[in-house]
Image 1 (cartoon, rainbow, N blue to C red):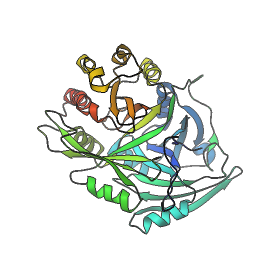
Image 2 (tube, one colour):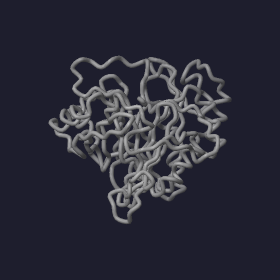
Image 3 (cartoon, rainbow, N blue to C red):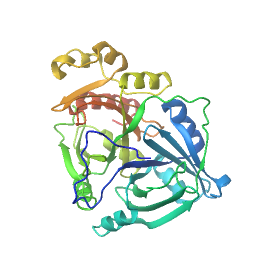
Image 4 (cartoon, rainbow, N blue to C red):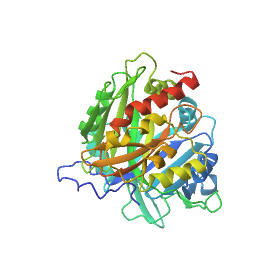
Length: 377
């Protein structure tokens, strides 16, 4: 099962040494995977589809696999007081450990990236069961985050060997219209953005898609810089943020203070009907950032004609931005745990291929209001 495919992108060019078919899964290391799995089912409408743990012969951890549309989350917790997972959660809180990429050849992907300078997380290996085989390999990216290459061309099981099919913990779960991973954003430290841009360019063959400097992304108090990296066919996009000088602490600095290293800041998830999706997420208790009513007063003047009624966007606090290709609608959740680290973006693209530059100021002022409430601005 692929996780991000878009009819708007083109096929890989022949010279692409790392052809990617999309995001295979995103794995979170968490303190309590069963309770986290319940949250993502009840609040975000994911289906529980697979499980591995003591009942399947896995003695040191438990993992729950959640699915909605072409999105797959794996929630993993340690069963031991001293393990890499336990240490990861102690340092970072619940956070993204693995951004897994779907490939045709996991061994070649590992060879091509490691020979270009990637640090190996683990060498290629193959696992099998009655449903077929899966080959995995891995490299490190920023912080302790890993890119796992997943080759599952002929595999027909619920996730991969070692996992069994599992029914949901929430009675009669209802999906909310989430389709695929649009992009994943990473936060890195002072002066580190260009280092990781170079990594994605030279090690993984990505291209620089967009650049935002501290004049694009700033408020009266804080600023950051960002560059958007995209693979050859546009299936995988990784914006990379670093702090910039401001009067007060930026959201990137706050993240780094609480995550204690670079890491994944937020995951943007696409929907075809953001109003219906966000209305249902709000009904289920998901909290979103808000912008003042004044944002909508001159929206049509700034954005132009759109299909949606302004009042319906205002009611749900949805943001709108336009580029040369069309427009997009977006909204951001508050952090989904007590540490102000990981959050989600819900996005609907109506032709636009950009990332909401026109909303940066309103968004960042909203984030600053939350930072101030936490005493971290």
